[in-house]
Image (cartoon, rainbow, N blue to C red; front, side, top):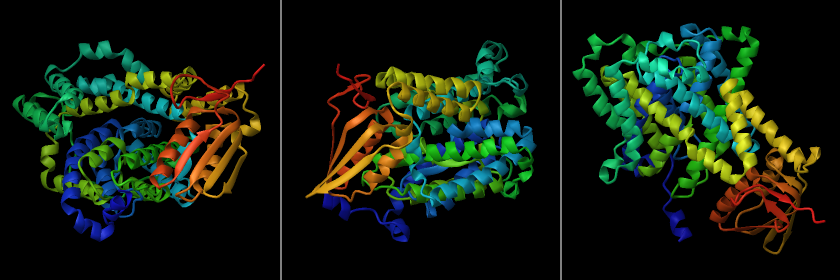
Length: 531
């Protein structure tokens, strides 16, 4: 069965384009219907001109697909970076000036991403504790919801000026008092469609929810005559693509060294993390079980980000919702990503007037749905089931992200996890290096890990595991450890999945004297000291 699967692997390059033209073009078209309104909404929420979201999606599709390291991911602007982009625009002075100066930090961050790939730092995602990463994403979801509620209610932008996420949430009663009834009606109906669409049964379910929203919102806007009865901020304005494609970057923000460096780090770090996590997730959905080259993909995304930032576009990542849709719609190769970008370009050139009929409340509904997915109560429940300590790290990350920023948030989450590890007996030396001994007898690799196996030293463990050739029996012995954390348990689970797919087998032993901190199968485990 395994050999049969390998025989029918889709071809790559031009041969792959010929072989899979119809399936990839169809999937690319469906993803384009999903990406078009989301790219506009993400750009607008990021304080960028809306057309810049489309420019990023076009570059992410047409350019990056030619040399990316993953087959099925879709590259484009991401809701997860809204908070950072809008923060950069604000701190660099806001408005058009803030946009141009933020682009300077994004160009440098794109070059840093290329270097991440060149120096093989695609394993970067494994250094961060999973609970802190999930906390960061949940905080981003809450911030998106807070920022988009006033847009959904179509209140005057002046009412939200200078307000952070907590202040915006506190102001909801005031926003409701000043809502625009007609625009809000379209927004609420759009939100109901977005939230209710996953529960639709039958062939209708295959139609992307954002497309259904547009098919209802645009005619409703025309019937209500928004062009003459509503303020200008009620509708999307994009302008002409060819007039907007020029050198928009300004490096004068480098004079504000602290702010510039902070945003270079955040763009490069969070963008790379989100991309790498998406690539890992989509590899597990690939029906052909192909493994992506994470470093090559980082280089491709970095090149895409550098080009996009020079032209004024948003930062791009491997975006998880569009990539999942791509897999579900039968995409076979990277050409599906190319077609998604091609269809966006064609639509902007031939039908840009239709885009300017979209009510902003409909775009806000789409973004609030993304925010709800990121900060869904089940994320909190799932983290609690893994362990109370994981929930504490998750909540601390959210708290500091909401009250300060993403960098402080993820730093606080990591610091708390290190403190917890030291409390459970991990020595200072074990925090960053786990003694790993690999031995080979007959057809078996024995990997013995001592002291502690935790997120801060997992990269060393991973390098030893990756050096093992495929097709053997691998035994990972953890009896010499005092502590194995949740991030390592989950990473070992992923290693087992990948290695088994390559024809080998993996078993983890030596945890008989370890006590799990919860009933979750991947919960952290600490050794019980017998009296």
